[in-house]
Amino acid sequence: MTTTDVPTHRPAPGRLDRLAPLAAGWLGLWGLLALVSAVTGAGYPFGANDPVDGEANLLRLVPTDVGAPLFAVLLLGAAVAALAMTGPARRRARPLNTLLSAYAWTVAFLLAVVVPDVKVLVILGYLPILIVGAPFGWPPVDYADVFTWALFARCAAMVGGVLLAGAVLRWQRRTAGACPTCRRDGADHGWTTPASAARWGRVAAWTAATVPALYALTRLAWAVGVPLGIERSFLDEMRESGLVWAGAGLGGFALVGAVLTLGLVQRWGERFPRWMIGLAGRPVPVRLAVVPATLVAVAVTAASLGLLATPAFWDFSAGLSLATAPMLLWPVWGVALGAATYAYHLRRRGTCRSCGQG
Image (cartoon, rainbow, N blue to C red; front, top):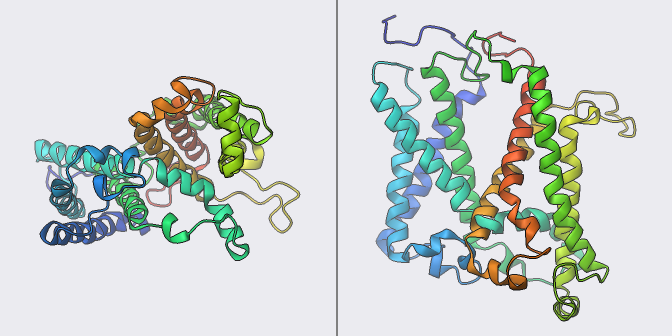
């Protein structure tokens, strides 16, 4: 072993070691599709080519004839970067490592946060209703207008961004001499101890639960006929069109999310409660809480960025009101939920199976 190798931990290989190759494959596939779109001039789903939801996406600022080749370059470059992260961790190329990390994180942020916008979060909120109501023809929507190519591309971008973020995070840990799975390096990091994570995680969890609860309050108030933050005439229009019930569905989704968020700091979030027959008293798998909470945190952050950058949002209810104020807090919601989820992970991760520390 040379002095340029990172000599500390040699974790046992596991499924997470496939993140970089998987990210490279996913990004490479979509990079090739973007290249085909750039050559043929067809298939680019954003901006002016997305007349339904394009205004709620920052990609509306990118000309459609530029978007496809730009995505091709970024995605194929990110695929190459992900492949570079599959090699041995070395410290001698520190400037190159920094450049590679900066590029990968930039692309991951663009894919996971900038591209998806509010449409992904809305679909997550409506998905239970769409699935349950499909056999009964309710809600009366054309599913072809809901599950579009543009929506699929947004979800694919988010998946690619999350995969790339996971790959670069593990690679940075390896190059720093820490365990790529748990980040432990033998040093004492006080804020990551279970006791410390319990303290700041509790604050983050209650913050992350409060914001969607406030959002749910306004939408459920409209459902029962209370024009909270809007004009009575506008509420009447929404009740006639049925739009108020769509808002109530999102409000219910937000309320359920708020309750589940509190589970990150409650006992029933660590062990299944007594009323869950067959599971009562058993430990809740850490990933069962961490994976969906992380995805929602990313979706909320992406939605807040797209929403707050949309002129139509500020025209809604004549600017700032009780109707829009909860949505102004969505960036806080996303960050707080991410922090609460990480604190939950730190409290419950136990001994690392890769490096044996903990």
